[in-house]
Length: 206
Image 1 (cartoon, rainbow, N blue to C red):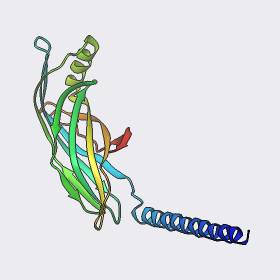
Image 2: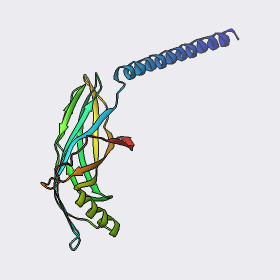
Image 3: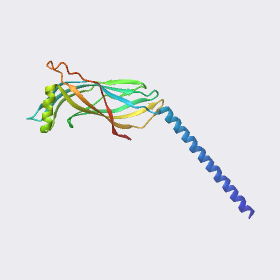
Image 4: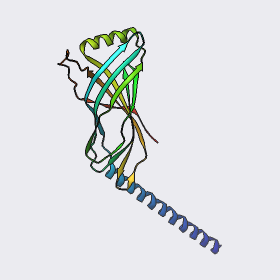
């Protein structure tokens, strides 16, 4: 009976020690995670189109062909003090009244903390675009005014970096609703206004 009680005491002590060790590990792990979060705590990355212009934007109703030449000046601001950003993938998809007419890949780069990078994508070519009667009417009105409503969406894959630590890849979309003036001697008063872009609600991690 005495041996049995002794074995029970030893077993209880071992279980108690294991429990205390596990609790200590959990607390230390929680402190490390909190410290990393406080150090890294990423701020928003800001996106703006600083300038945009159309050298050409001609739609042919007979062939449903859009001939375009769009130039953008796209600013990306990393406001983080300690986090750099790897831009591993950037693609611009451009639409006119919800009709996609161009997809363009942009140069990849690494952005230092508290830094602004300006990209200058040139979106140029011809595409077949099916415009309805109301959209054709909008096109004619916008052509007369010399300013076109164009939506550009930037799809990106990024990774945050601090020292030797780099996060996993983060995917997200940024949308920019633009009123872009057509370059013309007849319309000299039309100027582009700097436009803020907004993050679209589909942030995912991979």
